[in-house]
Length: 160
Length: 367
Image 1 (cartoon, one colour):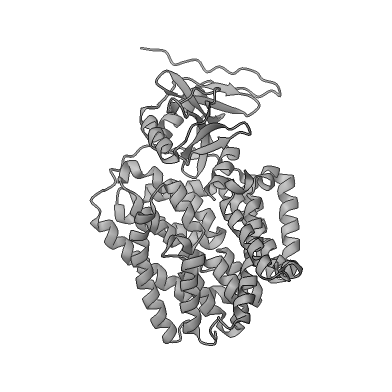
Image 2 (spheres, chains in turn orange, blue):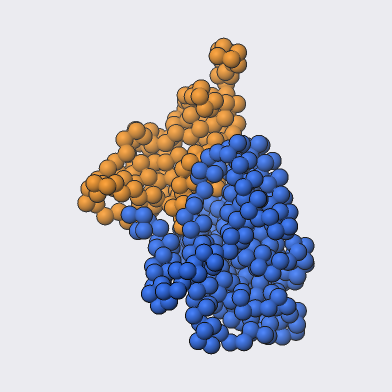
């Protein structure tokens, strides 16, 4: 019979501990939420040098959780940390949305989480094929999703 | 870049420049056309609505809707419609749509095509917002312009709200039954979004405070208190607001008051002494230029005795064509449905409600 994983409390600054089992709950929370994720309106940024980069928000109900960088040349998501920039490319927002909706069906939740102390939150990666395309933040108890409020504001502004 | 990005603002700015060419005296009247009290209330309530939504509280409500409907398509449709109508009466229709449109889209995995439900949700937010003075910008303008009591406003708009919601209920049930898709309800855990309690309680207090101060004619103080408190509690709320939207409202006031002035000077506005004329003109004008500009254009020509006809007309005019209300754009952009689908479902509802409203106006219900 497999043993239950030990409940480890690691002392942190300020005397609070961290519940490592919460990492598993955080992953489960994102897995349960994944079927309700939808693709938000793509945001096309145009730089002063004529460069274009496209971000696609991942929405959970009324909140944006994270942005996926979209490569306008390869017409697929870019890995997290490498926003795809392009010059002289026409971007069709409808096409980007269509591609991202298909991509979202192939996205899987990585079965591990990292803890970000300043945010007091777990971060669960979303993978498409072999690349991480988004990070979903979950509360330190692993139960509640934490939106990206700044991105949610950006989506609102973009709508008008 | 800025003008290319902010299309609505650019249109209003160029309209202002065009009006300056037609009437150079407009420059001296510009500040006088700004309704500072109404703008203060709109800005304060935008901040409060926005914060209430960002607190995450309404996310729990959408999860409750999904749980309570327990697999029934009709029940789900009705719960979404009633909840979005009631919420938009409290926190402005566009904010209510920012909550419900993504929620409905997220149900597409269960429901298949959600175009019909998206349009019903948009209609219900527009109709629900007609009930209170704080439900939408045109109601705030009417409430402030005529110095109406908050309670009297609700009492007067109740018949229109009830009739519109009854018609919408019948329309929804007929449509929902026709749909073959049924929710394959699975008792799965639907994760919650974190609630920001400090933001929630501060926003509830500020909502009540702003209504009270606006009623006493101290709208600017309400705005100052709102901004100050959010700067202390959660400054990102103040930084994150779309201030271009305020410029849009400011230019709407100036441009459409000037248009009203020009049109009036040439005797082109018919006599607005009869409620039926007001309802017809305001609802049809809203269809063409949107309901906030229609309110600003007509409000100076409608006497206090007929404010209800104006309120009914511009709120009715918010449904129907996409141009009727700015809130409709949210459904199009966030919901990702096309204009044809929007009009396929919204125009029949508008036509029925328009006919009923005309009959009830003739029967002096909205006089």
